[in-house]
Amino acid sequence: MTAKKTTSVPRPNRALPSKGVEWLHNPIFNKGTAFTEAERDALNLRGLLPPQVQTMDDQVKRVMTNYRNKTSDIERYIQLVGLQDRNETLFYRIVMDNLEEMMPIIYTPTVGKACQEFGHIFRRSRGMYVSMKDKGNIQKVLENWPTRDVKVIVVTDGERILGLGDLGVSGMGIPIGKLSLYTACAGINPTQCLPITIDMGTNNETFLKDPLYIGLREKRISGEAFDAVMEEFITAVKKVFPGVLLQFEDFGNGNAFRLLENYRNQLCTFNDDIQGTGSVALAGVLSALRLTGGKMSDHRVLMSGAGEAGMGIADNICAVLMEEGLSLAEARKRIWFVDSKGLIVKGRTDLVAHKKHYAHDHAPCADLLSAVKAIKPTMLVGVSGQPRTFTEEIVKFVGSYNARPVIFALSNPTSKAECTAEEAYTWTEGRAVFASGSPFAPVTYNGKTHVPGQGNNSYIFPGVGLGVVATGATRVTDAMFVTAAKALAALLREEELAEGRIYPSLKRIHEVSLKIAVAVAEEAYQSKLATQPRPADLPAYIASQMFKPEYPNYA
Ligand code: NAD
Figure 1: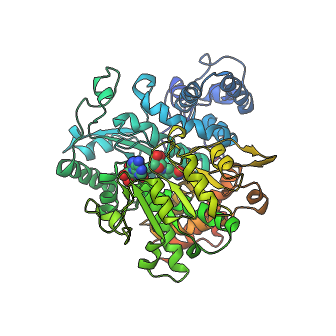
Figure 2 (figure 1 turned 30 degrees about the vertical axis):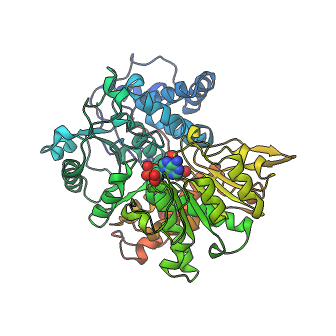
Figure 3 (figure 1 turned 120 degrees about the horizontal axis):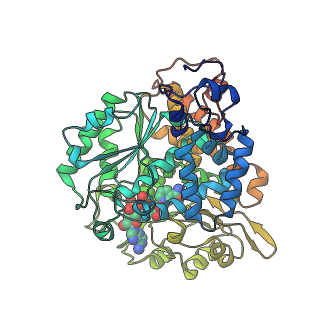
């Protein structure tokens, strides 16, 4: 029997199932026990479901009871992914209603553990796997995806998953998780999202020996061989999904900068580890200025870690310094870097191109402690993936000459953070303006409760994505990320700031994503990158594009 169209809830962009049982086994259409009596008749579902028709609220109750009864976060992750694979609408209803609680499960830190165990907890394939063995056929592979109506792709090769290193195809948990956040935070329709992992091999010896590893048991390819696969992949993406927004995710830094430079003017693409991080950290810095006082140009920033995140943050801070009237060269001089070999200075001969921009005239410093003592930063930012490197001595020193020392320990997951929230507040007698990459619980010090900021990229990329998709923008620009950072910082309320927060509560994420999307859309119209006509009421139009986790009526 054919389903009639009688609903105002937008329908998925897929052909409707033809047999009763297919409605239940397709997560996009499945409503489980919530299929109504009329739908059970119309769709040949009689007998395939228990007789009691339940509401979505009944289903939510059941899932949440089971969820809260689980004894570990990885079990909660497995439960949620299982739900996503059975019933996407219910999954998003639950995640969207409980985002603060579930973000650390579907994203960092639990997703990191899920990636490490990916082959062992694997249940059902989601998204697409392209491998270096598909070379010559990548377009055909992509054509196997059931729809061409894809608006956002997140792609990884798994070489640098969070701060956990090379996880090969087990890194797939990241594109899946990020796309879940595109929907949960900004309402990008889940049926228009496509996670992709490219198997370029792995150098992870544990995985190479693990019989349950689900990728190719081969060493990583690099150089020309790597670039040739990427070139074919990008060409195929442009053909099969023209106009799609392609997000590069967790590529190793030996490739990430080059890929971004090579492709950012060829299609609508960005790298979240570089640009998204740069944007969310800039928002944190702008909010921190409200607590420290002064302008950006009054500050000295020391970054520990000169990779994708560090460079993205530094470049965005430079954009603000230039708005304050500094030249690019003067702006860069306000920012210092330490990498695994010590302070980045002019005399060093081992610097790759992106580090040279920030190599200043200075005597060498072998490690972070001596660099901190020499530079005396007002803002100390950790993006090195090296845990506990903000030692008591370092944090106390930075606290000794700053009334409000800005300490961002951004490395993920929690186990990699440069220091904990409690350490930052305790070692500075509660004066630190603190943010981390993974969440930390509020800390009470001397009777005052401090709410640590989480410099979570999901404040930024979902809203940027929504703005880009809604306007049909043909490129993603650095200006869009600076705009997004300013929009985010502007949303922080005085009462939130008083609690020590430098980001709005995640409870406000839908409002935040919409505001960012509108700001990015304005930027797209101004820079003439939009391909969609400007609607009379831009915020209302963008809001109307946001997915709502409601069941359509198929009867
Ligand atoms: P990356 O591999 O590109 O860069 C890491 C950098 O750290 C390299 O420059 C390396 O030389 C440097 N490094 C290594 N050992 C060091 C040491 N002992 N001291 C100082 N520097 C050292 O990685 P990335 O993409 O820049 O990410 C780095 C970390 O930042 C990861 O843990 C990641 O999870 C985190 N991160 C956080 C956010 C966020 O909070 N929103 C976003 C992106 C990345």
